[in-house]
Image (cartoon, rainbow over the protein chains, first blue to last red):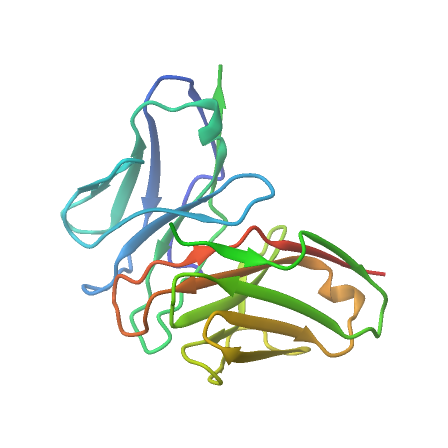
Length: 111
Length: 115
């Protein structure tokens, strides 16, 4: 079963910041939070990951709460091309290093 | 940039046919994965491989087999295709087993329809 909970859908206006929440209340201390997105009819695309500290790259920022039970992905200036399903994934740290995929959040950017 | 390519974007086969889905990555990654994606079920791992000639079953290996004869190529085989194997098939690769921050890179997917 997925270890994360995300809202099924969200809207955001073009040019505004998109904030996508994720709950992972059962996360273990050595498990990472990953974010991927999947644009329609394409393979998933890696966005960002983090353990405890907030992270930023050219695509997005990841804010992880101090208790690590939730996180927020921030797309600072959303464009129409950011319309996609966004997956928050907790990395299972075992010999398989398997990603457990949930249903994700369908983000729609509106002009 | 990492590139993962899949042999076909769309494929139509008949029940009982043997089907080969090919995946190639160009970044010398050790790990390769096959997923299927179905509406409402998300991505589910079929098989993965962490080295040439090595394979591990994922969550749903029944009805599938895999082959990894070369590091860059990972094939998914449907020995006798059935209609319930109609799905989107996604291949992925990642650098190395044992890295706690290993990132998976995905191909564009193959949409397989079995009639």
